[in-house]
Length: 293
Length: 300
Image 1 (cartoon, each protein chain N blue to C red):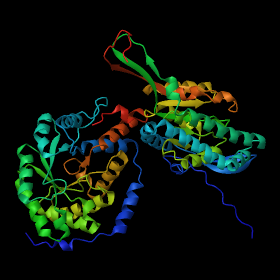
Image 2 (image 1 turned 180 degrees about the vertical axis):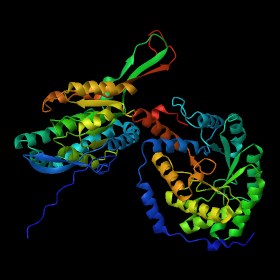
Image 3 (image 1 turned 90 degrees about the vertical axis):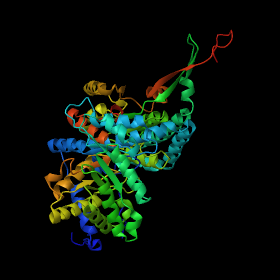
Image 4 (image 1 turned 180 degrees about the horizontal axis):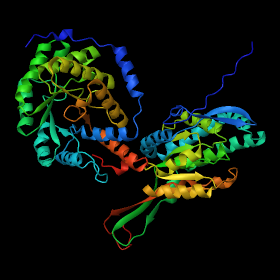
C-alpha cells in the first residue's frame, strides 16, 4: 500500500505560537490553476493580537546584549541552512525556477549573517560624543523605535521578507509582518526557523492575508511606532502616510526592487528604525584643555 | 433564626458549570451593547492598590484617577470606589471629598487573616473610624478547612457588628485557597448568613484569583439566598480581571443569573487595578475606530 503524504497546514505566527486566524477564513493559494495550500486570511483582530505580543516582547528584546542578539540572528541562519531543501522546494512549488530558488535561499542565509554581524557594531558606528559649549558631557546613541508593522514585498517571498525582518530586529525592534499574498509559503516556514532559533516569542509575528483588508490598521494602530511598506502603489503610500499621522508613526517606503542586489546588504536599513537619544550629563569643567571628560 | 447546617450546602456540578461558562464566553457583544457594557464596567470598578510599596502620593494619584478616568473622553462615569489599606483611608476620604467615589479598606489582617480577633477588630475599627464606607474582610481559611464553620461564621458576624450601620461589609472567601466549587458554595452561604453585604472572590494575592466558574457558583449562592430571605447580596470578583472582554462576560453572567437588578455598582463590583485602562482603550477604539496604545493613558 502506498503511503499517504502528510501535508503541512500553513498557519500564522503570533507571540511564538502557531494559531489559525481567529476569523476562521482562508484563501486558496494557486499555481497553474492548481491549489497548493489554503492560507489563513488573517483579520484585523489577528493583527491586533500580534501587536500586543510585539509590544510585550519589545522591552526585553531591546534589553538583550547586542552580542546575544547577534548570536540569535546567526542561529537563524544556521537553522535555515539546515532546512535549505524544504525552502527550495517551496519556492519551486510557487513557480520560482529551480536555479533561482537555490540562489534565493542561499542569499537569504547570507543576508541573515550580514545583519547578525552588525548587531553588536551598529551602535558604535552611529554614536557620538558631541562638542557643546557648557559643562556637559553630551553624547548620542541610537535606540530602537519599538514595534514596526511591515508589509513585506509582494514579489520576493523569502529573500525580501528575510531582508526586512532581520534588519529590523537586529536593531532591537519587534515586528508584525504581513507576508506576500502570492508567495506566502516561505514566510510561514521561515516562522518555524524563527521559533527554533531562540528568538523570544513576539519579537517576530507573521500573518498572511490580503493587504487591502489590513493596511489601514497597520498604518493607524497607536501602539505601532513605525511602518515599512514594501511596494510602489502610490495610492496606498499616500493612504499609509495619512493614517500614520495620528501617533506620528515613522513611515518608510521601499519600492519594488531586486532583492538579489547586494545593495540590500545595507547598514542603513538598521538605522532607519533607530531613534537618536542624546544625553546631557552635567560635569565639572576641567583644566585648560577645554575638555570636560 | 432557624438553625442552618452549612455542611449541607448544595453540591456543585463542575461539568455543568464549565459548560455554562463555555457558552457565555462564546458570546460576542458588539456596538451599542458593548459600549453600554464598557461604561457600566467603569462605574463598577473598585480601583485598587494593595502593595507594600504604596505611598501617600500613589494613593492620591489613584483617587484622582477614580474620578478623572480619561478627561479627553466626555461622559465617562467615575469608578465605584478606591480600595486601599486602612492606613490610607483618611487620606483617600479627604481626596475624594465632594465626589461619589466610595472608599473601601481591606481589614482583618489582610491578606492572610492569620491573627487574633482582637487585632482584626482593631484593624476594622481603624478603617471605620477614619471614614471608610466599605470594609473588605478576609475569612479564616485555616479554620474553614478544619471544619470550624461556627468560628468562621462568628468572626464574620463580629466584624459586621464592629462596622457601623452604613458601612458595607465585603467578605473575601479567597477562593484560590478554598479549593473545590463545593467549598466555595459553602463559604458563600456562611458569609451571607453571617451578615455579609457583599461576597468577594479573592484578595488578588493568590493565584488563581477570580475566575468565571467560581463567580458563577457565588452568584448562584446569592440567588438562592435572595429566594430564601429576600435580601440582595452584592458580588465582587477581584484579581486577574484585566481586560474589557472578560469584564463583559462577567456582566453577562450577572444579568443571566441574577437579573438586571444587580447590574449596578450597589450590587456588583470589579476589584481591579489595570482593568480600567483596558476598558478606556476599548471605549476610545469604539469612538475613533483606531486601535489604542497604553502609552496614551495614565499609568496609575
